Length: 391
Image 1: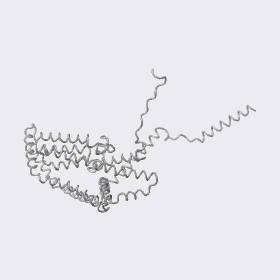
Image 2 (image 1 turned 135 degrees about the vertical axis):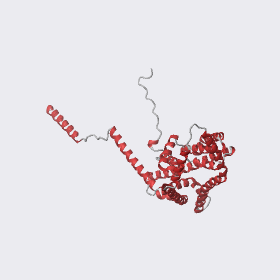
Image 3 (image 1 turned 90 degrees about the vertical axis):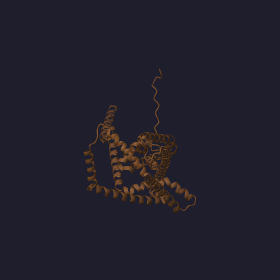
Image 4 (image 1 turned 180 degrees about the vertical axis):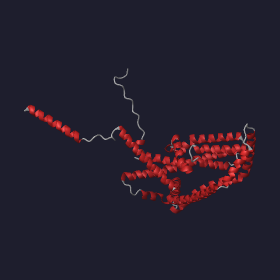
């Protein structure tokens, strides 16, 4: 009996194993390392398509999107001023109008200063530029090669033909259209900024109505971080830019470089473009000094620009901008190049603050001081000691 029982048990075990083998599905092709890599590749492709579609959609409605983004940035920067007046008892509408008028007055004042200074110093600059051009022409005639008068006449004829061509007229019409779009966008910017300053918190609460629980808390953190980062970026950059402009303005006055005030205003505006802006402003100031005062004065101007930028980068920027706003120079260069390729000048201006906002959102994704899991700093593992001890 024992022998037959063992045979029966063995038979049942074999049958069970065969049945289990038949019911087990084959191993998925997506489960191994190559399959997971393929899945990740498909996810990346879908993400790139979505981002490209989003960028394409934004480019189709830039007349609305750009004023909306700029209004959000200005509201984040000047919103605390409006809230301060409300806490002091100023009615909401009056506080909003005062803030809006202050923004318009600052922008208009900067433009008026530039135009007025250029008009006042135009005659002196023109005569100095003429003298500099004559000197450059005399130096050119000393070179071993020269352009023949026939080549100069041919170039002038080509320029005349282009100015009188239909292509030039089309370009002029495009310029008029661009001016009309700019005026429309500026008016839309003022209107959106008014509503952001007056009813921004209520509008954001309306947007958050569909969220509940942890999703609501996360959306609140994202909104607060966005406003904080944009406001800190604009106020910090404006403070640093003002110090740069004042320092370079004093240096240009000492060196008696013409158009010192417009150049200082230009330094202030270009400071909102990190790295590239300071270099561009310094080159332009040096060129003006070269034409108006000669090469020695231009070298002194370069020295003043380098000194001011070094003081700003090593002392002012870390204090005024804060560590949370600091992005690596490599990241800044990459996003500047991408923003310029996508949006031109406006893309260059908006690339860095929007990148700072994106990183700020990541840093509060899971809590006030809890970034997203993939963005957390990883702890380095200590090396495993070899078995058997030392020696």
